[in-house]
Each structure stands twice: as structure tokens, then as C-alpha cells.
Length: 467
Image 1 (tube, rainbow, N blue to C red):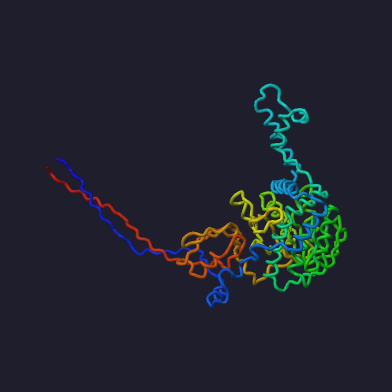
Image 2: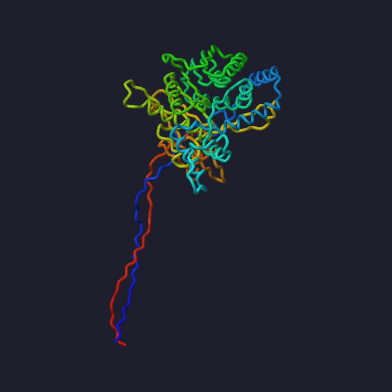
């Protein structure tokens, strides 16, 4: 007698099982939505766009530079070649190593020297790097030999020719954003630390020509000051009271509406010197402190170092006197920068410029720069804190990809389409560029989701059959 077990399978289907998921929704600013709907503004002119796209270098400056080169009988071909070398050096520059970093680097050099040495261990103190070529090469590969740049007559001219246009374009764009967003700001005084040939003055005098009355410039190189004074005399519109000094003023009583440090922090001998300088500049600041450096990893680190220090210093609870600070630009927040937390690339922006044509520049070029604008006040309650586009926009068929830094201190990537975001949001995103702000905010949205679940139950029935 054999017993057979027969399995009966029953499938029970449950439908309409609902649950809720919180999902952020991108919403276009109400004022911008109304303006573009009523054709009051075009998409490419929405209020988040930072203009001008390509600042035009002043004609008076081009003529004066040509006159200076002609007077000094400078061969254009030669200065062009030397200028390329200087720019390459500036782009590859790093700040000086701190003491703890230097010790770690020396240890790496010692390890490299002892890789194939199985006999007596080589100590770095026993090596004569002047005579030992191999050891000297390993030392150069591991330890950056920082040196301050000595701006003599020729180097100052090279800097004017090679960096004048780019520096002007960057500062002009930063100043113009301040003017556009802070319409009530009427600066009368400007402090320029590391003023160089005076590009900060030229840009500021063009943006606020009616209100700026005094420029205080600190520059170590007497040859740079000489060039700056001559160019300031030829400036249009006329630059008013200009004072040049070779050293930082001792008195901290005087404050200025705008304080700028542009492409200067690399010249300081260490972190302690940089922090002291930033602290002194902040003490001189009445409204805006602007820090600008090369758009490299090294340049961004110096800008971010200054940003973090000022925010911690100004908002410290241990301070006896009340003081406030917030990031006006480019960050829409005062939190820790999320850039290095996600990858090892700098937070930088790009600006187009026209190279000097008499040196053979025919096509537009782009300049990468890192910067921060800190304002000496609380963040206004009506500040939109729109996201900043931090990478080049990817325009594809029927969709646009934007990588943004948001007011929550996060980097987000949004894919904009007409179907999902609507025509106005999609067109505003598509007409924006790297460095612009997108006039939007995120809303938490509860989204209903349905899921169909099938549960299979197995019932076992025993039936006895005799065969």
C-alpha cells in the first residue's frame, strides 16, 4: 500500500496596497513663474543669470599697455613666450607646506631611498642632496619647493600682459553680481590687498563709478605700484582718490565698504600668515569681503580655508561683541562645503574673456576661478537661497541635466524635462549656464504609490489511495 501526498496550491492576490513616500519636488519661484508667463522677461534673462557672460576689457587699458611696452622697447614675441611660462607656473602653484606636512614628506623620501637598500638603512640626515642626484630627484618629486614670486620690472610687465584681462573679467563678474542682487548697496571706499597692477580698481570703478570715492591699495612690489599708478591715471571713468602702500596699515580703526584679496594668498608663507591676514581683512570690512584665487584644487582649498575661518570666527559664541557673517556668493548656505566630501575636484566657476589681440589672441578663452563673497551681516529672511549651478550644464534631446549646490549644503543633480517640471522651469534651466543660480526651491511632496502583492499559500491535503 502506497500513500500519495497531493499538494493544492492557492494564489491569493492583494491589490491597492497604498503607502506614502516623501519626495522633494522642484518648484519654480512664484515671481519668476509670473514674469515669464506674462512675457515680462525672457528665459535667458531670468534673475538667477549672472551677467555679463564675457566682460569686455576696457579699450583705455589696451592702449595704455601697448604704450608701456612700446616705451620700454619690449619685443612682443619674447614677452609672449615668457608670459606663457609665468601663467603655467601660477596655474601649477601650491601653498607652502606646514611643518607637520614637511615631516611626513621627508619620511616618504626616506622610505623611497630605502626600497632597494637591504644593507644599512639610509637616514635622510646623512644625505648630501647637492651631490647625490638620485636623492635630489626623489626630494623634488615629493616636496614642493614654494618660493614667493619676486615681481621686478619684467615680471610685473609679464603679469600685466598675461593676467590683466583674466583678473579684470573675474572681478567684474563678481562685482556685477553684488550690484545686481544688492541694489541698495552704494560703496564709497575700497581696500585692495595685493593690488598688483590695479585690475580690482578698474572693475570696481566701472561698476560703482558714481559712488566710489577712495581706493586704498596694499602692494609689496614697487614696480607693480608704478604700473598701477600709471594705469589708474589713464582710466575711464576717472578713478578718484587712490592711495598705495607697501605694507598692511597698523591701525584697525578704519573700515571699508569693500575689501578684496585677489590672487594674493599664495604669496603668504604659511597658514598662520594667511589666517592673520584674513582676520585683519575682516576687521577692515564694513560690508563685503571678497577672496579670489585660481580655480585649481590648491586655489579652492585656500578660499575654503578663509571661508570656514570667517564663519567660525564671526559666529563664535565665545566672542564678547556680537558679530554676524554669511556667504553672499557663490554658496547658497553657510554650512560646510560639500565639494570635497563627494569627490576630489575644486568648486570653481568659469568666465569667458577676450585675449589681447595685439599679442595674437583671436578667440575667446575661459578662465577658471574659485572665490567667496562674505557679507558682514545676518542672512536676510527674504534671501531666496537659490541653488548655484556648479558644473557645466548638459543639454540633451528633450532634457537638461544641472549639477547644483543647494541651500541644504548638498550637491544635487536634477534632470529637467517639460513633462516633469513644466515648460517654464525647463526653459529657465536650459537657458542657464555654469555659475548661474536657478530660481527654484524644493518642496516635500507625499506621493501615493500602489503595489500589487501576490501571496502564495500552499495547502497540503493528505489523501490515501490504495493501488
